[in-house]
Image (cartoon, rainbow, N blue to C red; front, top):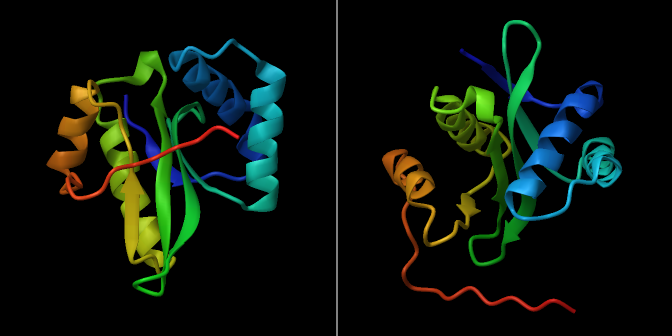
Length: 149
C-alpha cells in the first residue's frame, strides 16, 4: 500500500478524527470519538496545528502526524514540535511513517522553521530507529520537565 502525504484540511475531519481516537487508545486513553472529533476540528479550523495525512489512491487516510508551532527564542525563528505520529494497523510497515516524517521536515522548512523537535518513549525502539535513520539527533544535554496543573 502506498500513500501520498499532504496537508490535511477540514474535509478530512471524519477520517482524521477516527485515526486520532485510535492514536489516543494506543496511549491507554479510553475510546472517545466525540472528543477526538472536537479536538481535531478545533486544530484544523483554527490552524493551531499542522496536520499531515497519508492518503491512499482510494482516498483512505491511513496515517497522520500533527505538529504544533512554537518559537525558538534564542534563534529568533519559528519552530515546531512533532507531537503525534500514527499509522493505522492495516497500513504499518510500508514506509508511510517515514514519508510523513520526511514531509513534516519539508513542510516545516517551507514555513520558515529553524528547528523541529519530538519526544518519544525510551522503550519505543522502532520509532527511535526511524527518527535516527532520517537524521534526527537525540538530545542528551537537556532534561524535559512536566507538570499537570
